Amino acid sequence: MKLWEKGYKLDQFVEKFMTGDDPLLDQALISYDCLGSMAHAQMLAKIGILTASECKQLVHELSHVMQLAEAGKFFIQPEDEDVHTAVENALVSKLGDAGKKLHTARSRNDQVLLDLRLFMKNQLLQIAKEVLNACEILCAFAEAHQSIPVPGRTHFQRAMPSSMGLWAGALAESLLDDLHLLEGSYLLINQCPLGSAASYGVSLPIDRQYCAELLGFQTVQNNVLYANNSRGKFEAAVLHVLVQVMNDLSKAATDIIIFSAPEFGYFILPEKFCPGSSLMPQKRNPCPLELIRAKSAVLQSLLLQTLEIVRALPSGYHRDFQETKRPLMQGLEVTHLSLKVFSQLFAELKVDKEACIKAFTPELFATDQVLQLTRTGLPFREAYKVVAKDPYQVSEVDPVANILAKKHQGATGNLGLELSYAKLQGYQKWIEVESGKWDEVLQKLLPS
Image (cartoon, rainbow, N blue to C red; front, side, top):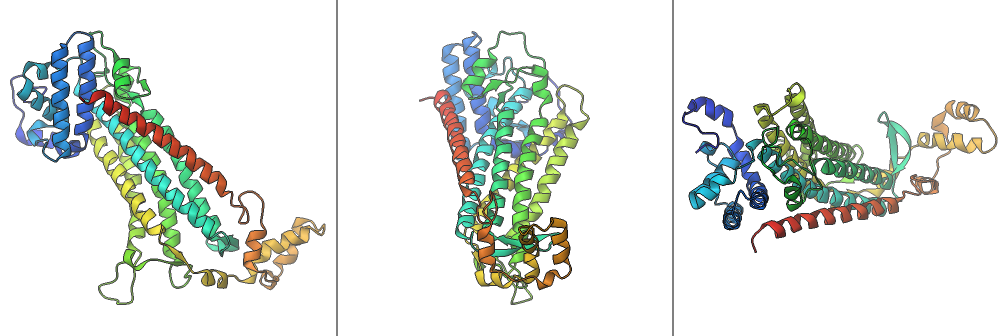
């Protein structure tokens, strides 16, 4: 039975079009829908809509649905339309009128908002853990290879001495900034929309703060109309963070692809990550890295989809919002998998130190020669002109000594990795705290 059913049937073809892939996508939301319903049931009991006995029965049966879903034994059928209908129909079939009472003061609009907020919170914490793991691997790589020089490039032309430590440390710091963005988007979505109903609240004395506390939200999303207006906006905020993460992985992947080519040979990729060619027997292809790079473009398209879907909508709920669920879920899955693959591959990446040192030629030290001349009192512009006459005749320097001699903050001889490690510890603590809050929600809502 449809939650909106009132005596007539929809055209089956049009109904199938409208339902789309929601029954499949909503499988990921079953547990969150049940938890939201447990909190709502307790609130309805608090204001006298449900009896204590009815509330207990509902919570117990919702817990049973969660167990079935986790065991792969609860499925949303196309005729159910969505997770909310499937769960309510299961409750009604077992509990009768108690199941029919549960939807009091609630709309599928605020239900799906709630389900997605809980889903996003949980998924963001999982992605934060993977970003943290990638950062730890990058920092360890930077520390282990900080004395290995490599030509630095601008405009992809040979520029100045760099190091493997500087390169990996830069990637780590960028991902740490992504964690900062992730924490911000987590704070944004950590608002409970339950009680906003169909955008305009209800005429019962519901306790929205009570539901928010039961579900572990930091606050209630106050304005009931904005709660529904924010759908798509909040998903886009999450996707924006994922785009930043994937762009960083793409940059790292491209660097590794280029500099593992025989013409450079700075990196050695493990064979087990590199499939071959069906035609050319000598080939070992960096396919996982190429796919990460391609998937970063997919993430940008998912963000654009979401922004465009909600861009011109008037206030209030619209069925258009349904189309923001798929790009959100796809973006979270792609980013999570890409991070795991990247970390696994990078942890086994090797560096050919001899190839790195062999790549140095005199002109890479031209800027250092200019700066050395300024120490004699020669103005920088004059020193620049002196060296520019023949930058390829600059006195060659030991590249290892060169990079280690640059001691100012953040340079090759002073990577400041302790700053990154300190940030890592801070984000680790934040993840632990928020994960602990999720555990508290489960303890409060699930029957003992």
